[in-house]
Length: 240
Image (cartoon, rainbow, N blue to C red; front, side):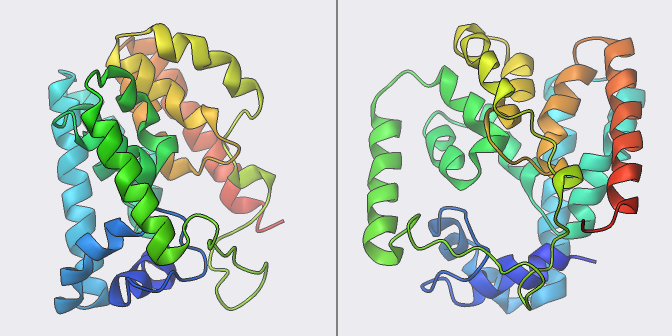
């Protein structure tokens, strides 16, 4: 329980000025989260997961999902598995509905979740702020050049490996870039964003799931069932 939080995120929060193995996100996010160390490892994980679930609920409300569809979202693999690992992708989805300066910064934290939120940002100053944060992260942490990948099977390798754990359609997902750039529909942008990257974990697919739930009932049910079937095969194929 909370394996990703305990192995990667919390150690980074404890010592945010040194980039730890397996941490890929913009390091500033861990500086912001540093006060969570006052609560300890497990309580902080619970706090973040509660905040994530509240964020998912608010997004469902913003997209006017029915109670039934909202419940199905909450008992879907992206939400359940993400909470089990201690991930916070659902919280980052708020970038689609947050003030304009949030989106470019949030995209630096985990672009496969919310790169589509940047599509609706018009003024230049939010991008300038994001560039400033990225440059400062490079000067302080040498990020992203200093990112260290966990050795497979090593002590810091807490995540399963293998193709079944990757939900990306790379490189074919890049064919959806024109649709992302052309669409003003937040549901479309949420659905496309994760598939523009070489690797996507199941926890990063909350956006496409909610997007389908806000679009068509039968599409949503098909996606929901397909995710559970794929998730079952994923966890039963082991790390290979």
